[in-house]
Amino acid sequence: MSLKKDFKKYSLNTYARVGPVFVKGSGSWLWDGKGNKYLDLFPGWGVSILGHAHPAIAKVIAAQAKKLIHIPNNLYFKEQAALAKEIVLASFPSRVFFGNSGAEAVEGAIKISRLYSKEKYEVITMTDSFHGRTFAAMSATGQKKYKAKFKPILKGFKEVAFGNLAAFKKSLSKKTAAVILELIQGEGGVNVASRAYIKEIKKICQKKKILLIFDEVQTGMGRTGKLFCFQHYGVKPDIMLLSKGLGAGVPISAIVVSNKIAGLMQPGLHASTFGGSPLVTSASLAAFKVIKKEKLLNNVNRIGDYAVKRLKVLKNKFSLIEQIKGKGLMLGIELNCPAQPIFLKCLSKKLIINATHGNILRFMPALNVSRKEIDKGLDILEGVLSNS
Ligand SMILES: Cc1ncc(COP(=O)(O)O)c(C=O)c1O
Image 1: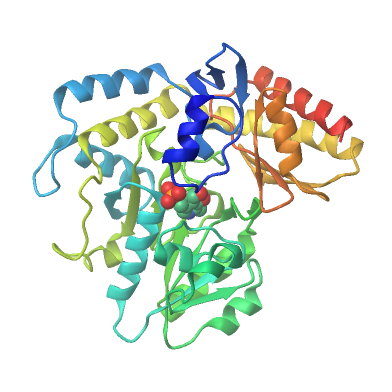
Image 2 (image 1 turned 180 degrees about the vertical axis):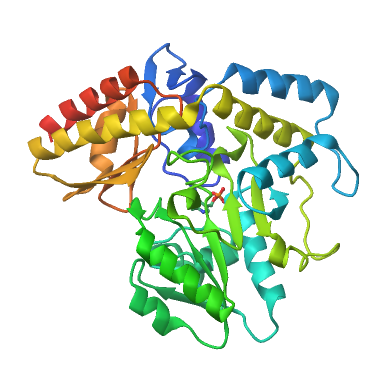
């Protein structure tokens, strides 16, 4: 109890914390200090893609900590070079910059869009998008509630309705430098962009020489059943942003810049003290290895399909469910009522999921989650919905 009091007294009040005090985790499970076991189907807000305390990640971090934790980015070290190569070979011809968080990656991408052209500086963003809490990332975010108290926000961002091609076309001007979007909006409610929409945006961007930025902070690293979500769409971006699952738990982000424009960045224009340290890049390399070795993309597709089937059964049973949304293991249940009370009831039954965008329940389990764990979680949810 005194720990919760200390949080209240000494930590800035930015988070509405709930639940017990967690002390350890393993796979899709967390334990509180009293030995109670919780099923975590939203580990680390989508960060802990291999679940908690994966032995391969723990081993690499421990070994790396004994060798070299940090070294500045004006010196050479092998882990960062190896990770950049891994990402490039798995995505598209490009060069990579490493930072520490999703928002930091967004900031860097916006800086690149300014380098791209002197005359063009506008960035098109999407309604219900989420790009982070730093100033430019917040300005790019298409949700009023995050910006209302921080006006004036940065100029140069134009918001258009997600999925509406006509609105996108109408928003373009001679000043348009870039468009930033999530192929599947996460925090904004698990909204999946259609293939036709993305293909058309790509065509327009190519024709008008507008940079296409895919924010894959949440959809990257296997979350949707392919290593990167753009691979479902057959459309390559000019810039891809990664974070969350990239380090399987350690803070790391990447700006993946296509070779066509990578030359815009030169020494002195951008930097990050901690970005891509030996510690975090070695953990990320280990995560890539585990995804391959444990064939986790297959698991995401198999378990994702299974979860959707079960969720559809729940939809038929409960009239408060409007629709099931998402792809792979990025799933949302749209309710016709607030989602937070359902999230809290699930937590009281020792199931961790997420409530977002008012009425959306969200699941982003570890990529190695089992069918049995999904069954257990959905059984708990079913019980909660029965009493709601
Ligand atoms: C798509 C997307 N972009 C950017 C961010 C911001 O990431 P961070 O909180 O690491 O700054 C998030 C976080 O949820 C996100 O989902």
